[in-house]
Length: 479
Image 1: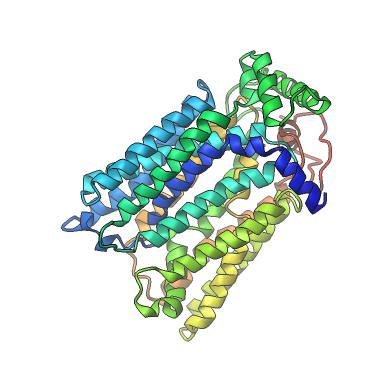
Image 2: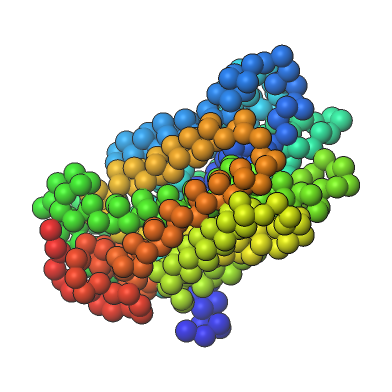
């Protein structure tokens, strides 16, 4: 497919990305609050921390992740029972309350804790809903780029949060500024949800609302009549649902354990490469070169996140062309090797200059941006049986939040100044990445340009899985 054809395809199928725009804007808002546990936010200069114990501050910061865990579970319960538009309105309301509290009471610890909990709750619900909804409504040629864009928007929110948090304005605190930006997103999200959030045909067909499903499919495909392609898609969805109707809801039975483990490994790899400990080391080393001017903005954070966004955009636009498997393996392999190599260098010598360290970490960030964080999301949207999908995705999302919570809690008070500490931390992150990369190399199939039914079958197969290109899957599920 040439560039012109791709642009035309994307424009024709614009209603599909528009349909998940509310969730994407929500994740932009909540991602800003996630930044506080991925980079040092400079919270000790904020008034809500004054005369507070370290334990109280720690709990306040990790409440985002606790809220996200609760929100993911809530999303699992809601998505089985309610339409996406209704759930989105609930999420918008939660974010609006959280942002309002951030603006109105920015200096009170309890208010900050309450706001961060609400933002985490909204994050957990929205992430689950967007992955399921997006996977079910997007055409197979664009599923990768559109679902990868969800993680891209989370990264954009983290960039904003990581940039704003250290800034002290005369009239506005960081919490107030984040709240104002979040409210702006929610105003737009409200109207988008009201006007262009179309329900998934899969959701409607599961409830025997066939005529509504057909109308929704026609709107999503930007067609005024039932075309041959739409008829084929509807038939395949009905076939998939009839196959899934004979299965149980257990996420550990009937072949579901395989995709669950593979995607969980992808999430673990994502956290190993992008967590508070690794990011703290990177920002410290790069900060020795960039942050010497005494500016309130952490230029090292801006640089790292800008690289992650720029390179991530290239990976996002390539995921349907080069494939999920290739991008993820290149990203994991390059990141693991660089982390291990840098870790060994820091342990073996104490003479590495900040300039060289900066160059190595920039190269590492480039590799990690190619697909490590967004490929697991793409795979989540297409790998699971429809009866098991919501709980399966919820489990891997909760695993990610728990890992972030553990890393931040354990290392927050570490003194990141010694080269041995640098080296040990990077080795602990890099060595498991090598193992995960090898396992995914052996077991992960390629699912680009497959329908969700074909992709699901490909994940459940034990033998003859596709490692490259796109083929029609065999019509057999292996136990």
